[in-house]
Length: 132
Image 1: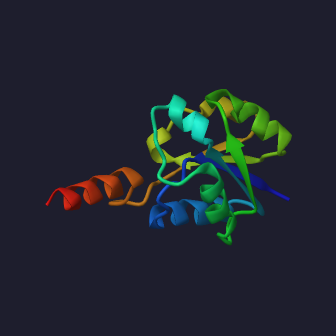
Image 2: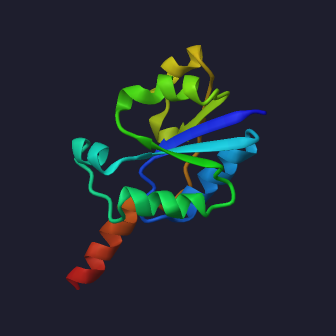
């Protein structure tokens, strides 16, 4: 069985998230999704609309996702790859080169992001609408 892992906050789920999850799953048989814990988001200066538990529940309902685990630190990726017997690590191309160190442990693939959509854009658009 080929196992794939990807990471993210996965707040305000949108078609870009679904696309990367589908394409990640297409690279293997089993997809593990690590989502940033609320505490880790705070350390990164990010605030998710949905709690960790709600984001986890939403992701678990997506047919491409086989397992959801918490991400507590930037440094845990090597251990996650080892602990979950991961063959392929997947991230969006905006992270290109940032996780190449994982190639000592598994294949590293950067997938193109879906053009024109992101959680940041959704938040900005909603704020602009509210300001009108």
